[in-house]
Length: 182
Image (cartoon, rainbow, N blue to C red; front, side, top):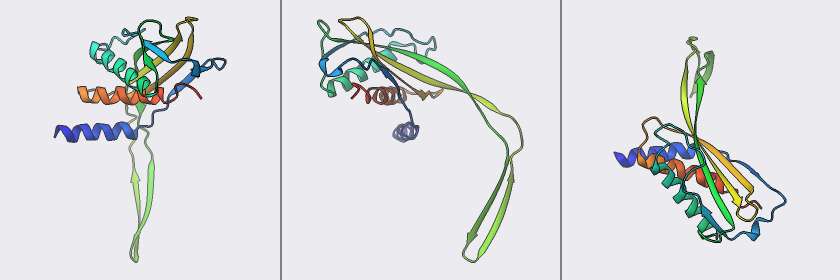
């Protein structure tokens, strides 16, 4: 049963279309950078206990490490060329359910039918929590921000450690797909 739940979460997360927001200094040649270090503590973190935990911070740092190493960067605490910083925010948004009239037409073999449905106006809305991850890349030489990427994803109210891991992996992957810029 646990596997089925995890599979469902993975499917739902993959169905969500996350788009990373990217900005960077176009004057910089990113091919010159080979090494990085990550600041383990986030610059800013939400006060929500689902996000504000050492477990979430560890997941973010591990995923950033993994992806940058796969891209050919070298982790170096001393003498690194890039410093990676991040922050986690929880954004509350409201979804509103609209009401309306629906009409459908269908056929089966030689028969056809028309259906008519009504939605009664209840004007419902619900609160939705979205986890927002922002990754900043600084040049250690100039101490300036040279690249920033951020993405948001729906955060379940009753998430499991596997859900959090999958969520963080999806966010970091989406953001760092665009790093270094081409």
